[in-house]
Length: 148
Image (tube, rainbow, N blue to C red; front, top):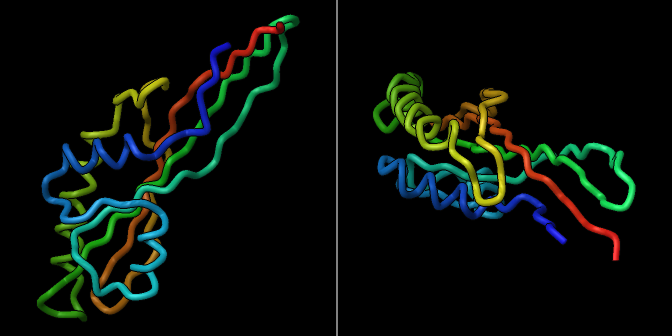
C-alpha cells in the first residue's frame, strides 16, 4: 500500500522560510485570517494555504491508482511605510519576495510529489498601504492501494 496525501503545506512553509530571507513571517491559513482582519502585522510576509486537489479516476483492476493534482496558494503581504497613497514601496518589496518565492518553489519537489509549477497570480487586496497578492502553485502525487 502506498498512500500519500492530502497535500501537506508544512514543507512549503519551511522551504519559503529557508529560501526567502526577506520574509519576516511565513505561516499558514489561520494566521492569514487574523492578518486579513487586522493587517498591522510584520511584513513582508507569506501565508501558505492548501487549495484544490483534482483526482483522476481509477482505471485499473486489482490495484487502485489515482493521480492527484494538488494546488497550494501563497499569499504575499507587503506594506508601503512612507505614504499610504503611493504603493510603489509595497510593490517593489512584493516584486522581490515573489521572485524569490518563485525561485524557491518552481521545479522543487515537495516530499512524495512531482515538481511544482506556477499556475496563477492575482492581486487580492490593496488598501491602507497594504497589498496582498496570491500566487498558486501546483504539483502532483499518486495514490496506490493494492487489493488484499
